[in-house]
Length: 115
Length: 116
Image 1 (cartoon, chains in turn blue, cyan):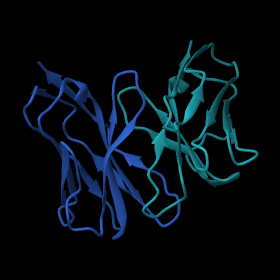
Image 2 (image 1 turned 120 degrees about the horizontal axis):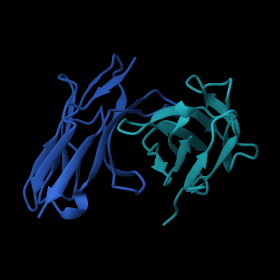
Image 3 (image 1 turned 45 degrees about the vertical axis):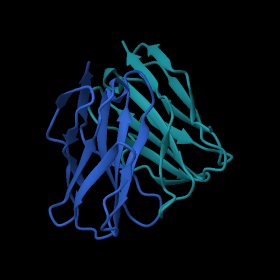
């Protein structure tokens, strides 16, 4: 069975600084996808970034980037130039299979950006 | 921008009562998912539809939960009877197809259920 572990229940960062959220996963699959989702307080979950396991290049979306270490089964999220609007619960998620498989989520990390 | 719609946003009920949640996926999305998110935890899949067919309902408590997507578009999730442990956020998500590079799931705002 696939599992996703987020070892940091809560993190805080000063506005404009950089923060890294950790995620590890366990799978025997070779082809899979990894995601970071953001869930702001009382708002819906939105996709931040995704990474295909077959791609060696780390994904980047504006201020968000990942460090994907396939051998170590590690998938961390780096947020640069943190903004107050980045305050949210961040979930790491894993998906495998060829046809519409479910997302397996970690327990989440609460990120608070302080002014 | 197209979004997944859910209603109601909030529902308070007493145990042993029946409740129903509705989800309208993004137009054209063939795959629809219902997740349950207990406070402080990540979402867990309850049921997945491909068009009108159930693909995965292995984690759905079938003695009290049911889900349908009759015309392959919108979907209803029902709980009867509700129990105290069912208090959670129920999230609906949709994706264009199952699997492949286009399989990003888009989430609705959720229905927060409180069972008293």
